[in-house]
Image (cartoon, rainbow over all chains, first blue to last red):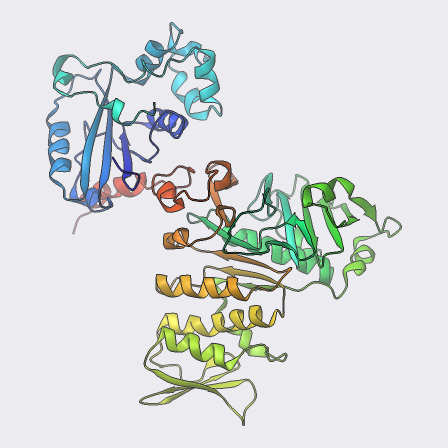
Length: 168
Length: 365
């Protein structure tokens, strides 16, 4: 991949957006981030038309849902056939962001990361937190474990390409 | 005139806002040579400031704030500031560091509380031969302490301020009252002919004051007091914008104002022409003067300028400044690529426009 490439992340929600925003530049290839659930919504020409030449599209999606993967597969096929897309990178989260964080830190429950009142409150706390990287570091965050697992079940057909955008 | 630092709280669109115009070290082979006070090379200031950011990120507001502060100080019109307080129940404040020449640095600090009490303080320090801005601010001492109110204090600055602000909605009103004959007909001609190749010539009327004639193949158009006399004329929006721009370039060329804020004047103008005119403005800038230039044109990022010339503004909870030099340390890195991949976190959020597609799908014909 060359330094002239343009990277665009598609993430399911605001928490993933916050996580990528926090990790980009230091741990991850930087890019623009769009909140768009690629498991549920088709990536149409309206969106594809906006990509620059040689765009690299990174799809980040959860694998904890019992969902038909047809839309995701069609999205990947459509992106792969678009002239302005250089590459599609898949990042299946096992099974969601919270579990990825637990797997790559020393916390046992997600509420422990930000001392949230409950696991439910974590999402809001995470989005509003101004020092996520510090909190991850405090919890012995091992970036090599983050986004490192392969999905199972219906999602097992999607490879995990995260190494292509991780900074060594 | 040079502005070195601006802080604003609860004023205009800003909360706890700070923007600084010094830079830490000399750039080798910079295309903006001598970016420091002429005889005090350690006093480095950003001579060229290109402000970029999404819509409503504060580019125009920075200009408006500076203009109103200059007006407040030089015309002693408090209303210029108090009418721009966001929350009247809270104290509003600003502090501005500036200099008129190489001799002295000034700071004006202002506070206006919810009981309408006004506190104005002026500080100053001599700028020594080897001083930097950072050294000088440590030496600032209050002056005019015997004066009881801001009107008395601001008399200290009488007749010393000079500025030229131009905003998108302004039209070509600089020419309305050009009693100092700043507009240069040659500059007007070259810029208008670039913007519209069908223009054959531009001349200044010898019979009517403040009047220019644009000669076209089919007809002549008269610009009188900044207005094109014939309303239904064939000039494009960009060409009309060129009339005002010519005045700004003339002013920089004559160094008539010393401080220039050019806010999004190129919305109707082709990118190569914008870059050429910006480059000309930079070339014409005289020592100890300063240019501010706001734009949405990403091609400007590819100009060979020091990275410190660029400052990004972004608005999330409040307006914030992002200095690319905090992230990119080497001047040979592509700023354009960095912005393209949103390294500075300044890209607009267009998620709603993605959703709009679905909303539109539900709209009945």
